[in-house]
Amino acid sequence: MKKIIVIAGDGIGKEVTASAVEVLKKVDAKFNIGLEFEDRDAGGTAYEKFGEPLPAETLDACKKADAVLFGAVGGKKWDTLPVHLRPEKALFGLRKGLGLFANLRPVKVYSPLIDGSPLKPELVEGADLLIVRELVGGIYFGERCESEFVDGVESAWDTEKYSVPEIERIAKLAFETAKIRRGKLTSVDKANVLASSRLWRRVVNELAKNFNDVELNHLYVDNCAMQLAVNPKQFDVIVTSNIFGDILSDEAAVIGGSIGLMPSASIGELTSLYEPIHGSAPDIAGKNIANPMGSILSAAMLLRYSLNNSDAAQAIESAVDKTLADGYRTADIFKDGFKKIGTDECTKIICDRI
Image (cartoon, rainbow, N blue to C red):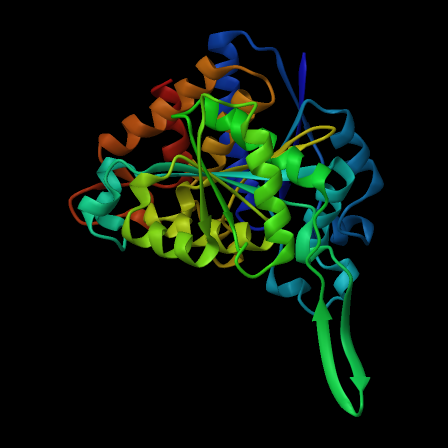
């Protein structure tokens, strides 16, 4: 059996993870994978029950699982809590506890939704890229000071720091991922200014010697941001640091026209976590209007990366493609002339196409 921990979290997380589980059950029946699901709490829901956003029992269960399916956490009702008790701390705790060192965020422009992109159709048609973001290092985890006075002047500072093993680990994953895609890797840094980026580039170049079948090129982060807007089709796999990846992946997500369709995977040393990139959207929770496709496509990534079942993953991805091609749209991507559906109906339609 393959144990999947399901953490629905808050808001629409409960609805979209339920949809993803239904789809996983359908592919399990078809491919005989042997999936076993166990629900656990995290986020605001966990705070209400246990007084903390990430109970130790939840983290322990995740460590022993084959994969974690995550919904979303957060909501205004918890914004006044002390920082260490806020729902978002659950995600940081999972990243640290599971050693989630890489975030993989695919960006695919679906032909039926091409008019939803803010970019011209000819620029984005056929775009299919993957951003590999280092997740546990860099400036977000470096030494910092929020306030210090020197000669009577107040200042604050953060430290960007990377080690060779940290860079090698994320770069190796990116090369291996590019190898099974289209064989092109773009490493993004700011080596013309930052010392940490110069080390990054040197380590990536050295590692490239072991991947002769992958074409490597380098871009400065500002140029990459521009290139994503003017020619996103040039990219296959992008690998970059934590802060640059945070910014670029959010920019790239807009290309597809809706964050409701965007999945992600956080690859860990112990196990890996899969989640849609959208938030908990408490204003639409419980109304059966949330788009479950991001969570469902995250489940496909779970099958591909944690369970090494590309056939089952492809079955889900093809079912989503067919659903969109047949004109079905949830509220976030609906336009006149299409068939408007809710969360539950969308889930059923996708299941029927597997």
